[in-house]
Length: 411
Image (cartoon, rainbow, N blue to C red; front, top):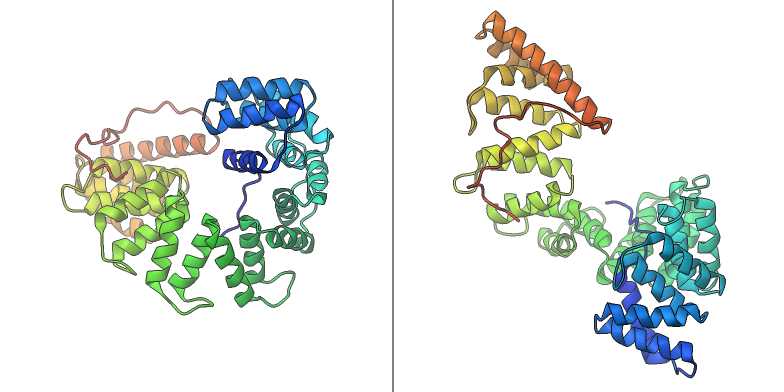
């Protein structure tokens, strides 16, 4: 399980507000007419016309038009994306008391988007919006308190803000509050039933973190009766929204036939979706499957690529398996020197299986091969360190790094 963390304001929220205003406002002013026309054009996806209408209203001082114009600049709809201009128009609307603008301006300050990152300034605007019952701002204040952004960590304050937002129906706040209750706050006893209730509320609203957390509880049987089928349903919903942890866990369940029929094709697709988002365990397990799956699903060359991705994130077991692929010629040309290099690095990281493998391999190498293997190990170590520091690398391409043109595309 994990905290929900989005502090931004999405285009979906903008559309929702447009529709709400369309149904509720009576327009009697010129600026109001501009907003109406802008909303009509936006809903029709005529973003150029929406931009012209909102700009006219914004220049006349209408806060709603200024807010919507900022949204178009922020999302690059009908105009080239320009975060600085978006921030300017949000500021103008926020000063007029527009709660949505105050909230989104606060989000810009937390992200350093169009402005310099400034948590104090973000908190200022979030507080103004929260006083107007903006649940997004209340959630963001809770998130800042929980994570010590611009302030000391304060779990009680975080809980207070999350409760306000959760009572207003904010899904991410319901999830994060549930997570706090599940773990217990400041030494207080955990409230698992209360946490599960909040997870269910948030999951029903479509919150992927809540779907993942609740699915995990059903998968493990923690706080609820173990129900793999129910876990699969919840993880499916989160995975469809791009939740990497849900994609990984669902992939593993499908792979092993837990809560669903075993489906290797689906497992590979899910693991690859998570791996491509940087989920290190997905990268490792996907590489293993691609190295050992039956044809036409196997792709050793692609397996090497995902093992390397896992290694770059410090997953040392991937070093052991890379050595095994080169040592055994598993889908790649056998290369005992490269196997020696990977197992040498794995031994340095405390991998006992690599130590056993390296001892057996060393007995078969010539002195020159051993020297070459040690040199290659140092070369790889330097490359990994430069990657860790975000520095460019200039290495010879790995002969197994070319994507197999016949590789199964799991996406």
